[in-house]
Image (cartoon, rainbow, N blue to C red; front, top):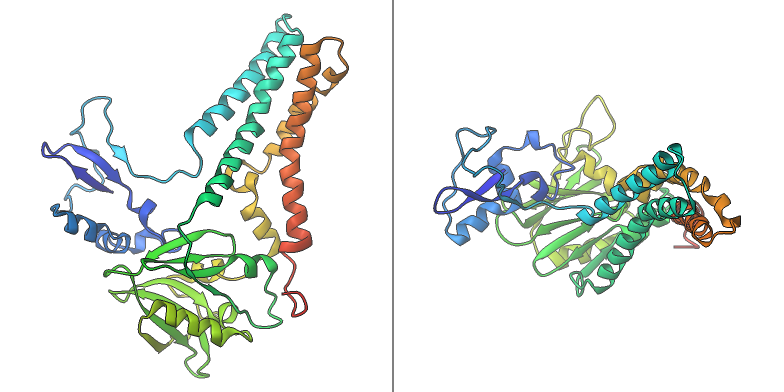
Length: 364
């Protein structure tokens, strides 16, 4: 944690290093010293440029008591979903529970009870739908990657590369950053300037055969920041062209190094600090890819579509009621079932019929 303190020594901003380290999910933070985290995130250079003194607290890990009661400093963290999304879903479930279960159990249920319960339950998939639409609109307006030199991968023929992998994974070189996108569509932004930026490309060679195994992106301190498996990125028919484009776009020195061979395994990357990177920057098994990219599996919970659909189905008989609030409740219940199940079915069909099928020379 980096604490920015004011003139009165009170913390005004906290920056959790794990939230700001691009490869935090690939390199265990326990393997990195605080100094390495500061360097890799660029925070050391930032505070130096701002002229702010930087010191390491000897009491790291202890709770600071320099804040007034009830006052917390701002935290520079990333959120996958906005706070209102969680509030809307929580309120929706609470309303459904109270009006569908509690009130009828007391004998005070009515058509309006069913209407309010259905409206509350619809808030759950409704909040999901709104946040996804807003994200899609932001993605369309986003120009942060405009003008980038795109290095499209060239996997070896017959290796089993999928359409998802070939259509999603890429390296984009911007004037100030290098953006690596893995097979799941997750981006990692690494700067090009400064000691923490990409300053060198290293091809990792087999110790005896001399073949290329992978490519490391290293920073100014010679620390590895990213690892691409050569087999899936540059071993295909257009591999040399893709490699030349990457080298030209980055404009950094290139060198070759032999990897140390392990007698216990044939996997050359097994003991590499970025071993997890090889897995993320390679084609994934179809089932795992579907699980990792599914909305409910990755954000909400894989069991929600079934559970919420069952809850909504309990209100479907209201469609044939002679009271309009009850009929509206039935309509909302039907919309809830559709909103829950349609994304799941669409995701599964798109993955099974297209994205997770192997690429063939006839259908690149």
